[in-house]
Image 1 (cartoon, rainbow, N blue to C red):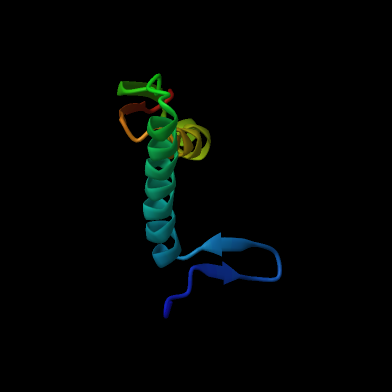
Image 2: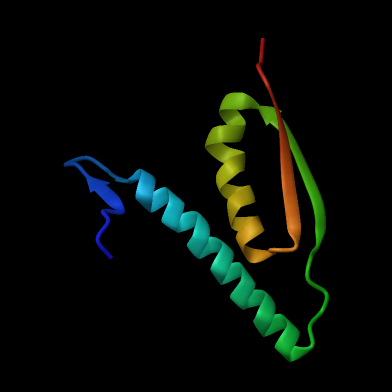
Amino acid sequence: MGASLLRRTTRKVVLTEAGERYLVVVRRVLGELAQADREARGDTTALAGALTVTAPLSFGARHVRPIVGEHLARYPEVHASSCSSIAW
């Protein structure tokens, strides 16, 4: 591939910038493949439409964003938007 996707230290493994970009594309492609499988089986009950999430900034970045990313990969017809707030 020619790009490093992971950065390893003695304590953790994290995605590089290239790895994060690659992950976004792979999740989208896998979602599209799953959609193609559903359509081939005649299962047209897949989710579609808008998803809006409101969460405090730090909570959204840490907990909500990964879950929504997986959801969007699984259901490519869903489009998400977010509204973050700063907790006082």
